[in-house]
Length: 349
Picture 1 (cartoon, one colour):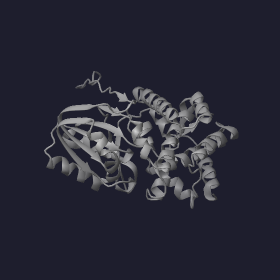
Picture 2 (cartoon, rainbow, N blue to C red; picture 1 turned 45 degrees about the vertical axis):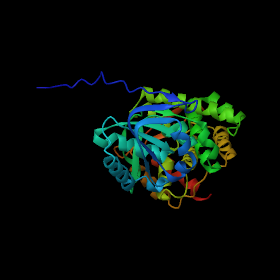
Picture 3 (cartoon, rainbow, N blue to C red; picture 1 turned 90 degrees about the vertical axis):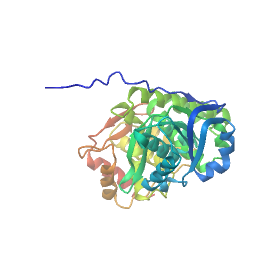
Picture 4 (cartoon, helix red, strand yellow; picture 1 turned 180 degrees about the vertical axis):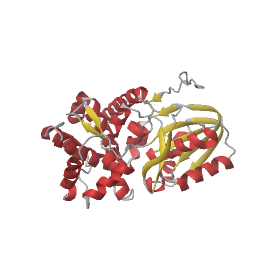
């Protein structure tokens, strides 16, 4: 006997992404702004002038990847219970990727799921982390190993917040823009080579293009069963670097920049990318003062850390490798000796 639950006609989870700034947000329910002290100090007043809710509360979490953990998540959940937040309430993630990930995960599990809105304040979160519904926290085994797919109700991208962004944080966001161009759009990559993202109009165009590219991929593969894995170009290496440095040595975008260079070396090794193409990517990253090398102390230890990545399965490591510029492959059959040989090149930086 068999009973089938037909879930093919699921609810529409489409949502808008506004890239022209915040005009007004009106919520006829309780709302909780989740932020950190730095963002609150710089921009909370700006948001409050544009936000109206039936009841409004503010929860402040510590700033930084170090605090993207169970302790911070439990603190957030406790505050939601304190304020008697119900299932009709809305959480508002107001910050960078760390705040967005934790707020989204909190929304996913609080009373089995409530709505949330993303208002990203860093370039990296505007072009990548706020779009697509990935939420989660880190634990001692690795990055984002506890989490859920939980789509926001809306995303509000406002370049006003970038005016106070430190240069290092801005560059970290550029890494994710370059990532999109390398794997999806050769013309976009060439445009990035010819234009400066320090220019206000150029950065708006780059944000729009990056969001359009990611939205298209997420629509095709919401839960990363196939093509969405391409968005992890550079991340397989980056997550190991972050884990080995206890999330203190590099910003996420900086680790991704190094990870892309490592992935390009592997792509060269297996005949997918030319030396000239790999150098163009490195040059573009270095133009924004992004790191492109990490000194590996033990290549075998680094290799074993790949298996802690949630994208690895059945003792196979899945790599996203660029196929020239503008295309990619996803492979779990790269020979171990090829990977080790590439890692050994990074034992001297």
